[in-house]
Image (cartoon, rainbow, N blue to C red; front, side):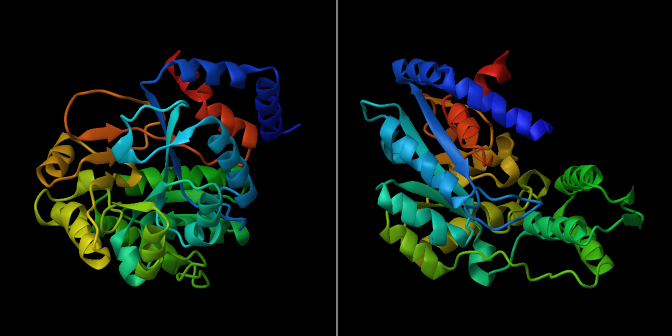
Length: 331
């Protein structure tokens, strides 16, 4: 029996012996805890490098949420509710949000936050992490060995599911620590190493018209930067200004709304970036830290952690929403 199958059975067992109900009851007693979920793609498409959350799983999760939680507007998190509070967020601005997620949100009358990359809205182009996913998918689909020896990489992977996963993790870590110019050079090199690779990508991003549909359906818009760059690697003046503030300005002008929320690309930030956000009027920033947010009366700018939802195991997702993974991270 595979590890994935064993893992699935374990979460099913935990759910049905009542652990999920116990976790939910404990959370219900603590009104200061807010659950903020982070979704990305909602789609039934196969994607080896970056598997989407299947549409039927998202609907099952939504059904559970609406029965057991109060889906709240981020600007009304201090408002008392009978059920535990939850905030739904989606990152990156994928087209399948409009096609698959929004109809379900409308069905259950749930609000959410959509964090968008402005360059993707403007041009339809995918950003660097998605370009990397394209490369991984090409290697997987064509069972390619990867032998690249250059001044910036020294890689020799013989194809297998294990090695392709190792490559995905290794190359992501390498690119995460490089500046945009060096990262672009490496991505171009990898794409050119496989002439048949489809650089256009089958994955579509949302447009400005899609954004208007979101707003009409009670979806709040957050800036997810201009180009999804790693902010800590940018020059503190012009480059960082474009990612933090030009992105905000463009969204506000195009959609005639106020943007008060910033979502850190790749979850990377530091004190300087937070201070820049505060100085320029952002009220909330969203991270990728897998934990819950506790209400506080501290600073005016709130940094909100989010629970990542990406598994297609319904029972694991529900246990995670109610704190199972968070509990074991602590001990």
